[in-house]
Image 1 (cartoon, rainbow, N blue to C red):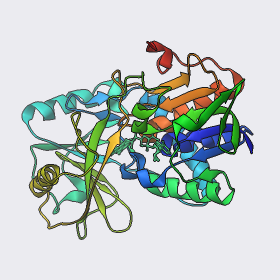
Image 2 (cartoon, rainbow, N blue to C red):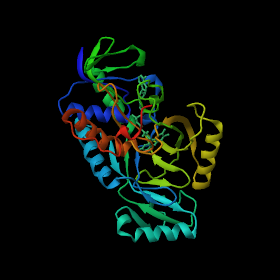
Image 3 (cartoon, protein in one colour):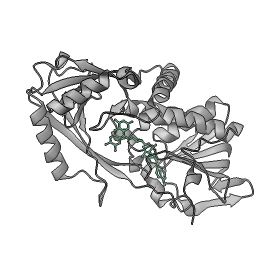
Image 4 (cartoon, helix red, strand yellow):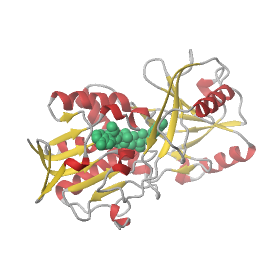
Length: 350
Ligand SMILES: Cc1cc2nc3c(=O)[nH]c(=O)nc-3n(C[C@H](O)[C@H](O)[C@H](O)COP(=O)(O)OP(=O)(O)OC[C@H]3O[C@@H](n4cnc5c(N)ncnc54)[C@H](O)[C@@H]3O)c2cc1C
């Protein structure tokens, strides 16, 4: 069977790239190992324009959010299912300094679109503990990543374009201008393996660091679902009647499994944040595909142009995958120059 593209991995990177390649008329097959999990299915899908202790504006967020909204709307229309929702973030402020910094930022035009002063805890009143103050982030959103990927897999499987299996790099045969894998022949193979990249013999020279995230899924009876709460952890609505609590950021890790220590730490944070009781129903972990310079990894292999990589979405796959998936499809199909900020040629292969 011959395809224009064979994608390895169907997390946010693989799914969004496939969407744009197919939209432009290319044929796409995907190999994804469902057993392996991945970062996307554990994500809350938060798109947060203002992050960190210094309330920094996320990289290129003014372009990323409208593009993401438009792309997820296209996918919602295709699958007849909601995936994207604007949802304000109410952020607890813990000191006079934080409160002052927030108010000062809210007054700057560079931030004012996203960062608002909040007089109180709004709809969360009665559910959360008092804080020094509260701020509100607007323009933030949440993507139902697991639902999107499951709809995507079901359709690709039905169309006979998804192979749910492990991809064995040693079985890839590179021919002139093409690549062969078992019964599949493709003009290009694009690796979208998330943290799995570190085992990819063609691209493991790229500086993928990896960052382990652990999350709790909990029930909090009556807790509002129309906002996201940021205390020491995020509390975000999740599937069914669950809430997503997380996530930890661990640069040092020895496995991909949930740990008793992180569970205790997150439960303690939750106890300090909430006035109301909660029940933990699940505890999960995955590795984020983070890169040393915190920028995505897009590009062609320096020796084998039939091999390409789309990775490095780090902590922000929900906002980055649509924009960079569309850009990479333009690069691969129309020869548009690759944006140097994300081009893997910034790293040497030696
Ligand atoms: C706990 C946690 C919370 C997060 N929360 C958010 C959030 O709120 N907002 C946000 O924007 N981002 C969040 N992220 C980050 C986000 O999940 C990532 O940026 C994004 O999922 C990366 O997508 P990806 O497709 O590159 O990788 P992945 O989702 O890991 O997908 C890679 C896929 O490749 C497959 N694969 C790998 N190797 C092989 C192989 N050899 N053969 C076959 N298949 C293979 C895997 O099975 C997997 O399906 C979070 C991450 C974690 C871990």
